[in-house]
Image 1 (cartoon, rainbow, N blue to C red):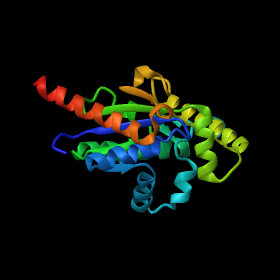
Image 2: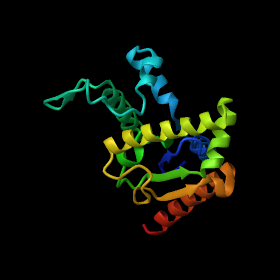
Image 3: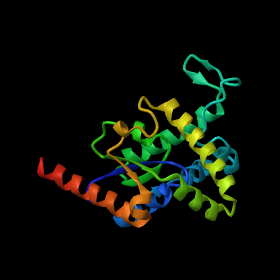
Length: 203
């Protein structure tokens, strides 16, 4: 793309936000980051990726963490800051990319390059998607959704002034159940294109 964009996608578990992000990245021919962040960090730091994944998008354990003169011993906080620094470097390099989660909506808040979206979905639709994807019962899927969303909410709210899923923190909040994954992605792609055109016309 001629103009750099940073597309940050927050999502409820099972809403299809991951797939929406991939489709947007493919549409614009830009990089998509999710698990790849951990892969790159693990390779750079010579750390087992399984170790990083254990603490990915997790709120710090208050019982075992301490802050001393601005430094923390919380593994959750350290892994989060590694990812924040990774994203800052990507943004500073001029690269356009799509990032799912990682509080990117807060990290780049106020930046004109940022397009912040939140993808949600009807519970039955999410249960069906998670049940099929993980080959588990609907009851297990509902439990999995609740657990992941609780964890994401705590993580996001730890690092952001605006609460997870609060519409005031995003350009667009969209229910993927209403249009399906493909049309939801197309809707957000159109929003990006229209806003880029509007920004250009305002110069």
